[in-house]
Length: 552
Image (cartoon, rainbow, N blue to C red):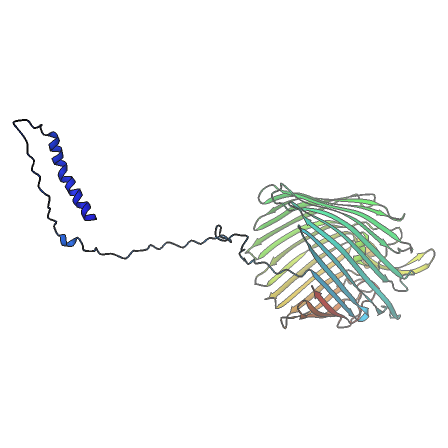
């Protein structure tokens, strides 16, 4: 076929010039006639033998292109999403179990009960329920060796806390309840038993959006506290509205300004104590970089209705970090500590307030200190410091004999206040080795004096001149934890006598039986020493408590 096409093409090219010449030739006449002679075209093909030779065929070469994978979990257009879903693993941190319960019992009727459960609610809600009860019921040796005291003390606390996380702030609400039941020494109090009831309702908000021009926290607490008996044998109730707020805003990358305030509105349900309102203002300036942290502030405390009307204390701190693990710091702080019934119970539950002797707030006029914190080695940390403290209306315990109109004279432990100051020096340190062995120790020495030299022996009688504690935790096996410690507190030397020092050697431990189930035990006062945590009231001798705990 191709050969015929080639021949036809050649004839056409040969005929084309003849055709052009015939077109330009003059027409024939009678005398002249042009005769055109055409010959057959028979070309000679050179190298005709090579026409049928097949050319050399080279194998095709394929260029390697990089493989492109579809990064989508479900490749679009190939696998319909509603037909097959890709499995992807998600790395999450192990979460603690929401529930915890513990129950233990020991000699002297020691009771240890605790429970807590965190409900994980949808839509950024969280609910936490807590309960704990501890106490004792046993016979203790009276300090004056007059016989046995059938003592009991039970303390119960329960709470319900709720949190909802909005887009730009957190809202929290809580309800708490407390009850303390105990008895006095027979010769200390004619009425025998005492009961403290407390409760509070809490509402609070906290900003969580860093893009806001300022950040804030605010809360209000409706609080009540009732003592079944006062020093006259009648009950007394304290109602309080406590409001707190803190607003702060950046003025540059490293600088912030803010204002914190606390207001207490206190009301008493009798005619013995005066109602009052206290307002604590704390404007502050904060400067912070990688090396420096400086706080410049002042406490301005106002009182209306009862107490000293105005007081001012500094609130200055400076910290400098160098070599990544060393920090020098200095402080000059202070402020108001309201002596409400909750604080008095924590200080001394057996203490009474003298009739008509309402206690003003304890005011820390100055607490100035210099110190250094450091971590020179991995796992090693220490804090070395020293300073001076000045306290106005400082609390102290005073055993005395009082005379009541109906009951005559009896012994009582009063809580009173006096102006004190002390110079102190302390050291705290800890060392942790791969979470297998931990040792922590701290000690602080104080040199006390009172402004009223005539009452100095009463005011300083139970003040601690040295407090020390050393504690060791170690794991002999992975499922067991053992802790050993020693607590020592020496009282201030006053005339004519000084209180005995606290010397409490204790040991405890826990062992995991199964997943989420463990047993625990703790023994206190292994040396069976006689000492007092409250003036005139004995503590337990050798005592222990043990039980089982659950996580669920």
